[in-house]
Length: 67
Image (cartoon, rainbow, N blue to C red):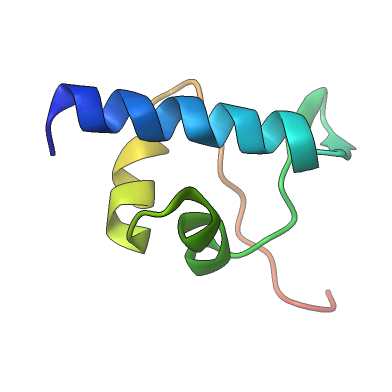
């Protein structure tokens, strides 16, 4: 992936967090969605999303549906 392409997806992800990141926890804003859903909203693959969120600016947390 080119740096320009990654930058576009990073900006899109930050915009999505601004729009839908209404779940606050531990002083951060979170998206309540699985990675395939977030990737689809960004127009990228789940693999591309995983590459983007490896950046220390992003934090991931694995949960189980309903618990």
